[in-house]
Length: 447
Image 1 (cartoon, rainbow, N blue to C red):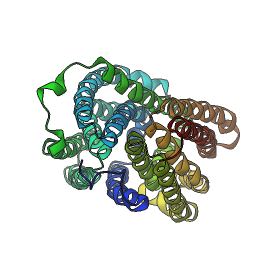
Image 2 (cartoon, one colour):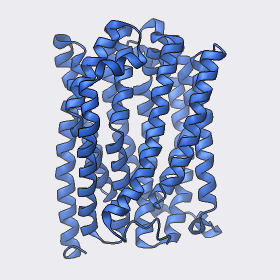
Image 3 (spheres, rainbow, N blue to C red):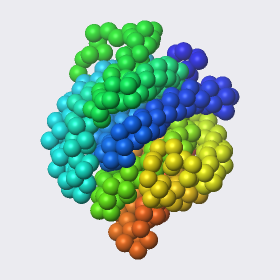
Image 4 (cartoon, rainbow, N blue to C red):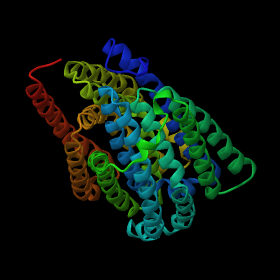
């Protein structure tokens, strides 16, 4: 094993932080691209074009989130075998994950293209937004292969302790994407389709960079035996991948119901909700990254039988979540209007966005901690609780919207998020404590 990538040895805080920061830069550049892309579309093509693209965020979360959850579940198996020192099982599980990902991509692409227009109509999308939404959506779905390829390749590298290569890939691809968006929209007077093509191209670029690293990794020199059929390993991958994929899909369904309810109030609500989602994704970034880090850390140490290090790792990531809340939550609470003005033009849309951001800024600590505990439970190899928490999130979010939106307006979308986060967080904290205690009993104490 490469000692630099081995998360089962060394000082816990140093190992986690050295693994965490490259991933943070990776996710930061992804979100910078996302925010810049939104700003370019909004300022260059207008609020309606921004709303058309943003209106697809829930559907993207459903389809792309499903694939991300699946590859993330696969990564748990990669990391557990790596922590155990069983490199042969790592290679075999990677080969099987590629086959499963190809099948998944074909199914999701076909299903997404068939259901895109009916879903936009079902969500009560404003007629002015449907045309651009379809153009953008079909291109993104058609290029889903590139997205899944990057998700799988980066998951493989991170599960083996390499968070630097995905960071390099995203930094390069994000810079290219922003440049292409600016070129197409402001210089060439292009449309949303060109922004979609730029996204697909740069996803393929990032996947290719990660693939090259995997190809030249000494532990991953595949041999003929790695391609043999292994039904047991295939079922294990699906056992971990499917619940996480379903969790993301279920969460997305709840968001789609919220989006549908928001769309009933017109394009201003749609555009405001789109911008709010972009900013929320940006400011929850450090805790999201700590979740990715703790998943790989817990998986490797679970494979090595080191439960004491797992508890220590949780404490480090909780501190990251708290620091993130103090630094970034305050920005959202005190500067919501300035954030809204950066992307939007109309005063009413800016006002709606400011309301949402201020409320979610106060409750940001909830989602920060949720990422830590949900990924820790997943890393232990118990994906049922995270999946169940996705169901709880969906139910609470939908109930809150149904009950609050008619009475308090757009602010209900923010309160729905807080309520959903509380329910999911409590469930994952209880699940983590239960499973870690069970592991201690089975191993006769902490190692």
